[in-house]
Picture 1: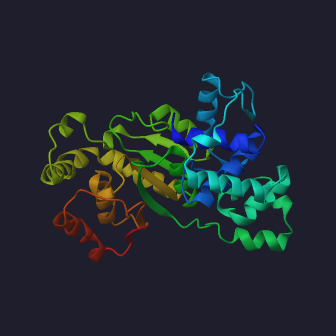
Picture 2 (picture 1 turned 45 degrees about the vertical axis):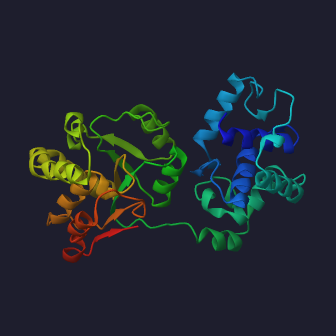
Picture 3 (picture 1 turned 90 degrees about the horizontal axis):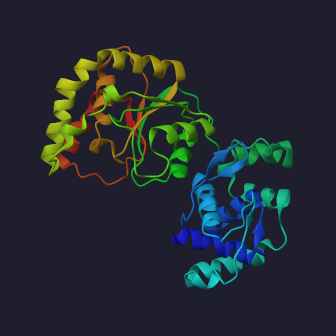
Length: 322
């Protein structure tokens, strides 16, 4: 069993065996926050902090007979789940139980929002819990920028919830999938499900396979030189043949103002999306700043290649990374 599911079951046991959905989400958020580990990721939603992975685990644990088949979270089997946790996690859980006591519902929500306001920027209920002055104080941490911006993002190493959180945190309004084949073994990132999850986050999804790299060109890639040659081929032969789609992409960026293109690789230099960005930078009618989300991620592209591509920084100050 995934360790995160043991965390969930132990949390339920520690809080009496049953929690409603919102209380469970908020307590899990606090537990992960206290522990400093993302056993579950969350993203801002109209209902509060939300997790599609948690919802998936709920259904799976019902199938396994460990949770009752109902909307709320309720243990259905005897036995200690707390004993299956690592010692540090048990200690954090016990401390959380002592701290929270009988808090639930709006009282619990009030506490969690004050401590971790980030995940409640889209909540339709939170504002009513606080005086206007107090609400304005903690809501000031939410990114309200609507400046037209073009982002790139890869989902490698991210859960669907962390991915959505990153997009929402940057107020992305539309996501353009530039994978040739939008299929993934990773939960939430195949085309149909990704489009649905994005719609739940009020983000428009579009797929443009024409801007992807055909799978047959990805065969036998052994080292950084192979990848660099592939990206050079992409820039020289594939992109010039897709000018209509590049013009369309520029128009989408203007229409939605804050858009992102996405593929798999965490670092943009490991992915063909950086060549799309490089093309856009050279277009005189494209004046948006370009931000590569997750640029701190490891990349196998060698330093010479990095320096070559980063040379764009010297000719266009709009090109940046976050």
